Image 1: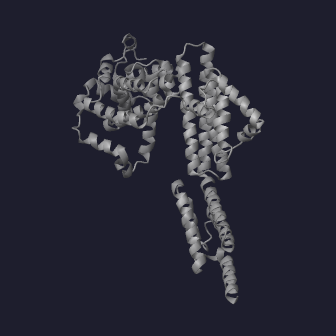
Image 2: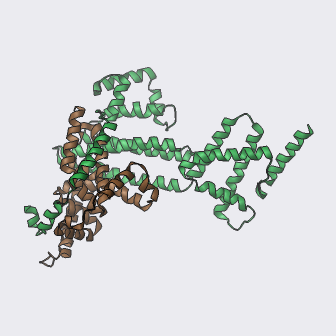
Image 3: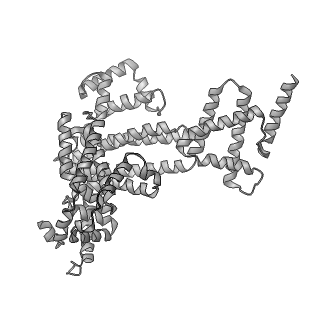
Length: 315
Length: 178
């Protein structure tokens, strides 16, 4: 209170404001819901990495044991696998090794709040960079996004817990300053990556993704080779259409194609998978009944097909 | 820490802090029902961390305000793209209904001074609002506020100072004509 008087602040209003409370009924209802929530999400005790690491070595986690684990691992694999795993991306065989072995081990070796916080920050950045690499390779799917999100959230919350703890602890000014530095750096890095990712999200990513998935689906189809070839070439044509749409809208010849292209582009992430299936189905239909929905750009190709069909009939 | 003690701790913290968090949300959203929802959300997120970290969190209060602040930011983002679906779907919808069925509190339930001050705090520059509120109404230290809003303690102190100057001017408490 004295502080408030010091500032000559309207103390009465503040006291009245502090009296703004929930109704007892509201407080009770929310508590009931929260208690139900706590039942559904029981206490897990250990922080996440500790639990994972102890699962891994079946030992209570202590740096000494973990260190033994590292030595063992290096002996067994000659260190090769751990090195190889460093470059792995979500979905790769060695990826679990990278995040659960390499990173857990590196985490154990960090001593001091600042270093620990820095490490959590680095892990977050690694996840984001993975997302970016995947996006550039066109391999970013909704599942990998979800997985990466979970890891990022983990690291970020761990980071804040460490920072929080460090600030509370009675430490030297230097250490405090270092923590603040790490915090500021982390915020800046996160901003940068958020920008990168959003730029990626707006530009090439969704289209690339569609191509990639469709190609994969086609690879899996395998058997019907001639139709697969046709599909692929048609995909290419469609991509060209899309490019034209972006730059040259005066070309009226491919009216219907343009509609198709823009539909594809507007698809949201969730629908993308479904849509690929639809695409395939539609293309299959076309193959079967030879329906000539294609326009000028694809005419060459469909006439090719007609020719090949004629040949079949001749046979 | 045993699961039971963690839960007891959680309930105790809820008892102590739910009003503060509710108030904070109310200040930022100007909507009682939303404020209750956001408060509930805040405590759910808080439980997620508490159940995992146990005693790892040191400054519970500042941490709660941090979560609340994030929940509010999320709410603002969602509000932009708010559709009818979001209002009716899922468990959230049920809550809204339940609170709507309750007799609406009228403005008189909030003391005149409180209402006046809350309005005035909303009138000052947006980046002063939170720091002034957290400092003077919730009595948090500048360092804690710095944690919550992700700025340095210095920046927070400066904002408190400027914010309070502005608030005094608006409320007519500014006798020195600074």
